[in-house]
Image 1: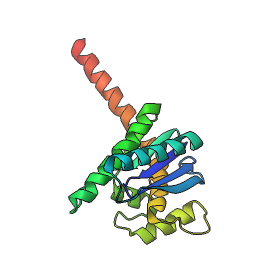
Image 2 (image 1 turned 120 degrees about the vertical axis):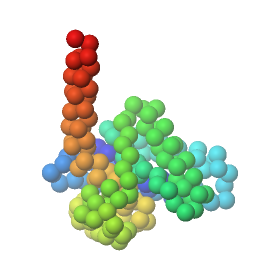
Image 3 (image 1 turned 90 degrees about the horizontal axis):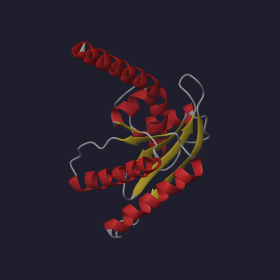
Image 4 (image 1 turned 90 degrees about the vertical axis):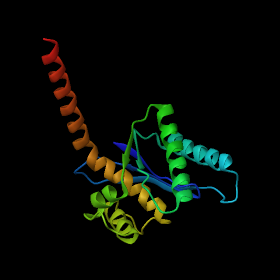
Length: 179
């Protein structure tokens, strides 16, 4: 499975591509950051994020996209920019028919480090170890994007089984009402 992880942001949007399957060694395919100038017009910044993500999609052809779920922060302006960048990433994936999964920061931290309260340094250290890298990816947004992709690869099989079970249960319940 090849997953493009996106740590959304307007100034720095972390992008990381990881390939592998749960229970097997994972491989980093690529990592980087899409940057936009803080003083640029919002529309142009969103367009730059879109163009950057599209380039990564063209180059790496992921089968899935994992995006950090936007959570409430004290700074409304920051959360708005993050949400807008997140929406751009999801739009790029939807345009290509690529399934998108949203993962919370604590879910990603727990998957990668074992603790939902891990700090950026711990996440970077575990990403480095799990992907057998020489050094943690910089900036932290890039490491976070790789952590999102790792989290999705590890959690997708369980999520798929759960969705199938719910679908079977729903189909069975519906069949029982129509019979």
